[in-house]
Length: 220
Image (cartoon, rainbow, N blue to C red):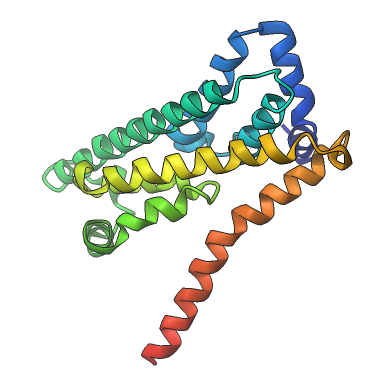
C-alpha cells in the first residue's frame, strides 16, 4: 500500500466503517475487534489503525449504528488479548535467546547482553508505568509488551499497569468519538477528528520527552 493510499484510508476511515456495518451487520464488531487485536498483538502489524479506529467506531455509536457498551467491552478485551499474545511471543523468543548462549547465537548476535539486562531491570523496577504511557503512543504500545516478554519480566509485575492502561486508552478514545464525532462541524470532515486524535496521542510522548530532558538537566 502506498503512502497516499494509507493516508486516504485513515482520513476516510468513517466510510470504511460504514461499509463494514452495511455488508457484515453485527459481524462488523468482530472485524473491528480483530483489527485492534492484531494492531496490539502482532509487532509487524503495528501500522494498523488503533486510535483512529476506536474514535471512528465511537462516532458511529453516537448515531446508534454501533453499541457503545459493546465497543468498550470488545475493544478492551481485544487489547488485553493482544498484549498477552505479544508478551508470549516476546517471552518465547527471549527463551530462545537464553538458550542460544550455549547453542547457536546467530539469530540474536545483534543483541547486547548488557542492554538486555538494563531493559529487564527497567521494567522490573521503574518501567511498569511505561504500560500506562506507551498505550497512548502508536507502535510503542505494540513494542512494550513484546520487549517485556523478551527480557523475561514477570507478567504479574506488569499486569496491573497493563490492565489499567488498556482501560484508559479504550474508554478515552471511544468516548471521544462518541461525544465529539456527531458534532455538525465535523460532518463530512472526518480528517479534523483524526487531527484531534493525533494531537491527543502526542501529549503522553511530549510529557515523557520534556520530563526526561528536565531530569537530565538536573543531573548535570
